[in-house]
Length: 364
Image (cartoon, rainbow, N blue to C red; front, side):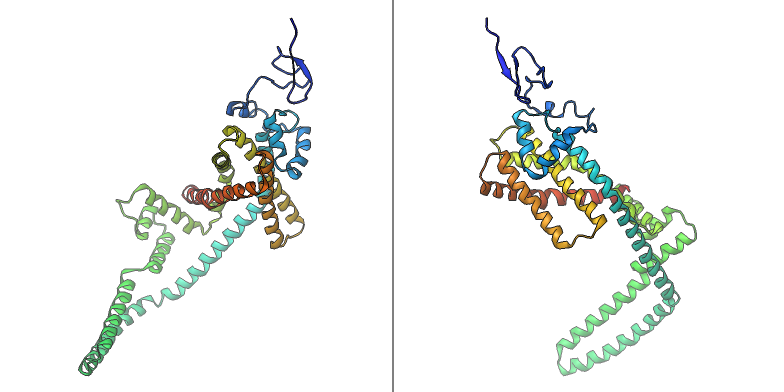
């Protein structure tokens, strides 16, 4: 009975078909590429980056689609695992981005603080004249109304209807202005809130002064709670920090959505896990590029024109990677790359930003 030999897909050396693992490189030769296989054994070694990273770095940057193609072909030990590659690069990126984040948070806090300070000083300046202004408006209201009435009578006798319409609008406008100042508009509510805060009033009392009613639901109550927190601290950097902190978590949803878009565009080109492999490597490339940009900007400020060129180069990289990975012409890859980018940047990314912004405001 003859012994059957097979070639290892990774190291390409032959061994007996009875073996489940290659005796030379250790790769499992019998497993099929599924979602379970793609993520198996990656949780425990996410941060175990060895020499394979350096072997993978140059192909990742200079050979679009090469690593993803080799991985689905079976060469899974020669280069760094796609999920491991993505996670390592993203951790490095967010580490360097944290320095920019800190500067932006501090800058936003200063802007909020200065804005509230100037507004408070302005309110104090006009606060002393508020009562006198209201009394003057009440006196002027009657005087102006009497004057307009005289004009109406005169113009009515002359048969000029448009002046009558104008005078009615003037009286209505004046009535609204005086009524608003008597009842309290936004500026006067802020003055009242400032007084309550200075007096040490409880938050419940301040919420009522701000306009919160007893029957309002949880969401509206939360908005008032966070709004008062910002108003008291005179700082908004906490919202921005919470937003940035949520981005890495959001990426674990964005990346699979991008892979799903590719699956819709290439329905006959392998299972979903194949598209996920491509997405892992592509996003690893994006984070590598962004990391390099941040490091370079620490040394020298890059002009905006170069930033746009770099952004354009990532799209060109995507089209070339699609052409290589899916074995398709460059023009078709350009069309599908454009479609994927449009769907992701026009719908998925903006929706995610809105969700994260709302989350950051409600829970910072």
